[in-house]
Image (cartoon, rainbow, N blue to C red; front, side):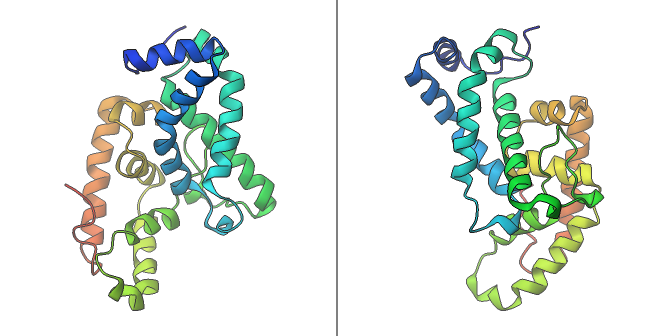
Length: 216
């Protein structure tokens, strides 16, 4: 069954050419989505792998699998193209986590991904994203305490709410994409995002320097 193309005419042409074996088209098609995929990797890569694994390593592994499986995808279209690429990328990241961490991989319930066995957007990684938005390096002295407060605030949210925030706010997925990734109705995904965003803003309003880090 062919479902959810979700790409423009120009990209559709590249997809057809790439699936027929044109190497240049295959590279251009992947390059179009590279930045979005890299953001996902940065968000979901285990912090213990810093210095041992680079997002470029994940992207390289993803490209190899993408090139091998593209013709199969084009024939079936089981999901929108970007979500398919994102799924492959997440699976490669999970494989690399297992390779480098083995039994040390996170197993806590609040850090188990809710969709398709991809690595979760943990409170640690989300806090790191938010800390990156602090307005002044002069706040570095209190960074550790701020990090702890932000992580505790994020841990107080339901795991699915953290995932919705990660997908919508940090990865930039649309409501439709978020709903499909999490297996929700569009209305449910939208309502949950609105509630989760409000809750996060309320929580972070009490943390110095964070009142304006989440857009309205």
